[in-house]
Length: 219
Image (cartoon, rainbow, N blue to C red):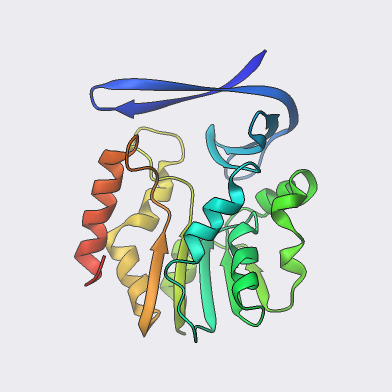
């Protein structure tokens, strides 16, 4: 049997996690990253640059946990950084179908692959008139944006160690970038980021927490 293997740094060692693969549905490379979709014991899995992003087994739980806890009644305009799979936008549309949602994801191929191979996550959400998919670099988009949002969601790939593939995403967790995010927030706006698991990713979670405390009053 073939496995998808991820190695996670933990304290002074490495933990190896092996996911049995039943079937490979898609394997390819976009301009930005390797994209893999497989069937496993967790349903379908989306893997980017060798790192698991979502499974159909618990995707709904993850996206609800990302969008629901900090959403406030009265919010109208939402920005999602990343989120090209459509899951976060869909959960927001269930809370309020009239929300104005911008999804800024650099890689259109992720959206195309999820639409074709994981439609139960995609749910045709980007066909809704009030959900706008923008294929741009999230760093440049926020830096150049002059309007305001009620809520900014970071549905990004995981923060990486500097020697890992895909570590260029770390700029979207930087103090300079988060100050730009703060600038485009309304006065009562909120920012919610996915930052990994507190047990296996403890070192990075603490690092991101301290970065956020440099920018925002309440974290």
